[in-house]
Length: 355
Ligand code: ADP
Ligand code: MG
Image (tube, rainbow, N blue to C red; front, side, top):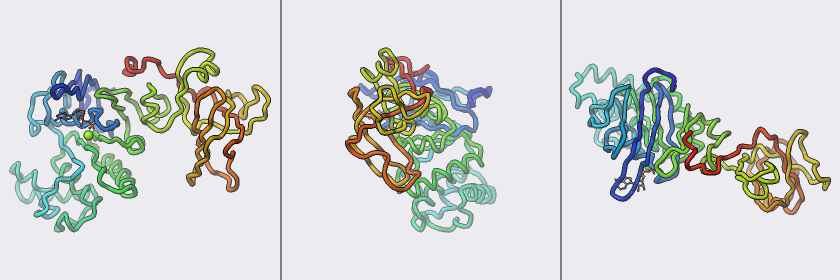
């Protein structure tokens, strides 16, 4: 992790402009050897551009890229110890799976028997032993994705860059591949830098996540840190659903002006007894409101509450008991939660989120 002496990747003051478009506006980041690191952010936030600067496909406007302690900022892609897996796989359709995997070695003049051995090893690492003689067209989307992975792993790079590699797969397969990709990364021990706009994907797979916002990093941390302690309202809103309160609600609860966030699953819902100050949980703070929507979603039910103080809140409750929901539209309820789940958000989050 970051305490290792030489990080696998170090980005310093990295910027990239395309004419008038500032794609990356200042990224400082260290990624440790063997980390599964994700870059998460909405479309256009600069993730691919950062990846391409690490790979060497794009020259930074300013800043440096170090790989394994070496400044590679001005080196060509083939001079860097990295490989990239793209969303569209880019497999050669006229070649067999084995030939696809061997291709990079062949280009580099690796002999036939060594190629065979390494291709077999790479195919085994992605659980495709025995598929070497097939053509890509005779394989499923998930299998093709694994061939692309084997083709990148066969070069034994120190770092593997993956740009939305699961984007073309349907949800079920995508979830299977998320688990497999994580297992493969653990086995091969290579640093993975994984780009995605899907927050579930980033949270489930990564050791650490960088959340991108408009060409910069809004927060870096473990999935739990980023989810439980969002550094800005942008992060709170992008990584999962969150209730972000300001104004009257914040004053009522904090006793002063401010902005705070609380996750929907941390809130308890109880019927409003009408007794001022009475709350559903001992040691908890609470707010009265009226149920505006009830959305049943199988394992959970989502409630939208119009707070008396003038804001809306979302509450998610597990459906642990069958039978009636906790509340119905129009019911007067009280929301309660423990203080420890309230995250205060710095007001000028854009300036302070890097800390
Ligand atoms: P992401 O991968 O997060 O969706 P990108 O890094 O692809 O974001 O793009 C960041 C910004 O830079 C976008 O506004 C995009 O339109 C712009 N951009 C990316 N590549 C180019 C390019 N080659 N020429 C001009 N603008 C570009
Ligand atoms: Mg992209």
